[in-house]
Image 1: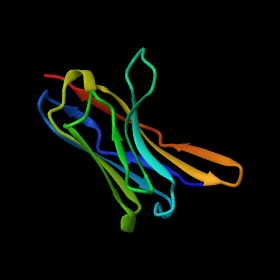
Image 2: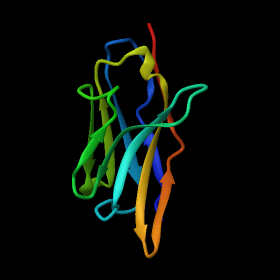
Image 3: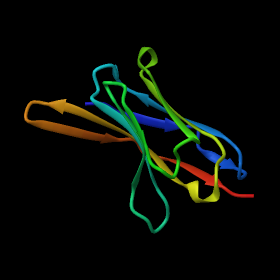
Image 4: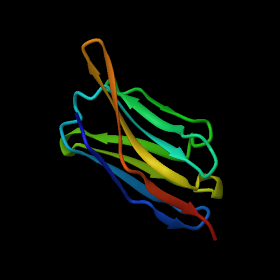
Length: 119
């Protein structure tokens, strides 16, 4: 099991930057996959960026070139650097972890952090 706690959300003007952090309650070195999802009002939760233990990172087309995901295994944290923010990036951002177990996988979520992009 793992507990995930996000931080770093807030209000920012269009074109600004934010850095989200996800702190895990245990070592993330062996966690198969970690990533960020977001959910805007009235919309389904969607993938923003995710990375596997093999260091392959995928980004949604809407954030490619603007957002950067990074993992700090030594500090058991994951970050999402968000640059050139747009109003359409406004959403609750969730940290996600997928752990392999015998016979399947388990998914874990943080409580979410609000990001609002507005002038």
